[in-house]
Amino acid sequence: MTDQLINKQGLVVAEEFIASFRTALRGEVIRPGEPFYDDARRIWNTSIDKHPGIIVRCLGTGDVIDAVNFARTNDLLVSVRGGGHNVGGRALCDGGMVIDLSLMRGVMVDARARTARVQGGAKLGDLDRETHLYGLAVPAGVVSTTGVAGLTLGGGVGWLVRKYGMTVDNVLSFEVVTADGNLVTASADQNPDLFWALRGGGGNFGVVVSFEFRLHPVSSVLGGMILFPRDRASELLRFYRGFVESAPEELTAYAGLLCAPDGTPVVGVIVCYCGDLAEGERVIQPLRDFATPLLDAIQPMPFPHMQSLLDDAFPDGNQNYWKGMFLRALNDEAIDAMVEHANQMASPLSAVVIEYYAGAASRVAASETAFAHRGETYDIGILAQWSDPAESQKHIAWTRGLAAALEPFGSGAYLLNFLAADDDNRIRAAFGQSYDRLVDVKNRYDPSNFFSVNQNIKPTV
Image (tube, rainbow, N blue to C red; front, side, top):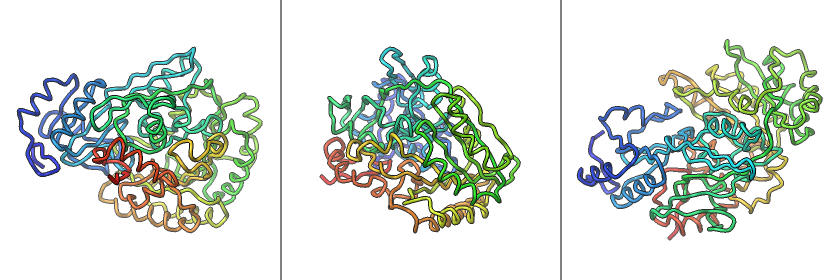
């Protein structure tokens, strides 16, 4: 690693250029060897260890525009960091510039209009804290430390997906700094092609400096986890299949093969019911009646508390490697394969998660947004997590082994935000039928592939 800033052609960027850029910026410029560099280059998934040549921590849109212009003029490789929660580490790059939005976390709520304007570095916890004051919420995610930007641009699923749709279904507009340094608005009325592409097309088209969301009346929910012994896993997952497929859309319920805090293997379901709480108790009662649980923590709670229930399961500082896929159906053979491999789980921090969508998200036409997989209902997340880097190969091999075992049951579609760093061969399938249209938008807004450190769509011009 060198303290010099090297561009994509291997040329050194002159120090006087960097000094002038630094002086003009309101935010921070951090370079190798300077204080806080190692902190600034660290993200949630510590298996990602990259060394940018310059990190630009922006304080506002003007800083983002200056950073894009500086990088383009000096032919720098660029990555964009929002919340830094992408498991593939696409917030960082080696040697180039990180445009870091983590200081841009403002949330402004218009309670009368039921909308919120959210800056590109905000996390879900920031969003929930402000919207909850008005008894409102955005359908977005399941972990409060997730970045709003990355989650949304990849489609966005969460506890409210079945009732209120995907996160992208609730975006009203984006403010975007494009590769040529222009600030544009993307909405149904302005740059509608870009508006379509940003709703599921990832970080390919610019730096989104703010999002405008539609809000929904959600304040308290019936939520929490119920756990059963692992030896009931196959039986519970078969029960879960019928339970969620017949449930009202107010209920989102995900199943998991995981370990209790003491390391005991268990199987569980975590639920969120966003309707009338008394009706919610009736809806979830069959789950309680399945068997005597080891733990039943389902109770009424404020929605922000629901959103943070899984935070401790995904802490900063651990090694992570994920695989995922949509299934054609959650049939008995797929269940048996999951249970068999989960019983060989190499780390008590790992989990296999089954997410069921359908409902409101499935009623949006596949062509309406760039997120194309509207007919898919079951998504599987194979989430390996461990603390000792020396054990990486063991845990990666377990993840790949289960992914391979499930491939015969897969639909050929993938959730963009679950793609690991080595999943480039699945990017096209993750965009599905939207891919060719996304290429057209890429050709218009980023023909030089300036934004390439992402689940990349290569331009053809």
